[in-house]
Image (cartoon, rainbow, N blue to C red):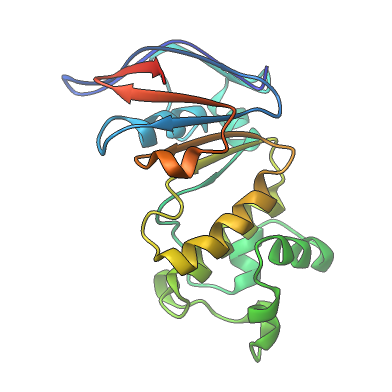
Length: 212
């Protein structure tokens, strides 16, 4: 199993967000989780990825339970991915030494090659403060390129296209298809149509994970 979650509960103060969640995801499987805003979808992904530390329950990702190892084993693409005030390369590499071939492979997989090649400074182009010199779709695909370059075995998708228009979303989903190929995937969304290709579908409702 790539992901094992047992009896996971999580609260913000007295507000119970997740209640006795149990889930196993096989290696290479794609699982979709639907739920309304505030239902705990993002919280669940942050727990899986090790960004939050679980206090009640158990989470293993690729056999590792420590949050630092879960972070190593997962790559996440969120609805709004913050970009650093740095170059495209630096936003993809995230401080790691990375060969040009790896960077350009990530750019190609994220369907950014034509755009990046057209820029005067190419991969050294500055994205601006909080990415304000690139479009929303370009920022999302830079985040996808970052996830590709990390090459983690588990990919977590948190409504990555919900803030984009339909034309931009189509290009983004094509890039996401490239990213998730041969990976274990957990994809959360409030829109069932975006989860149509998942192997299994669940719903988060009232803190409980229900089979759809």
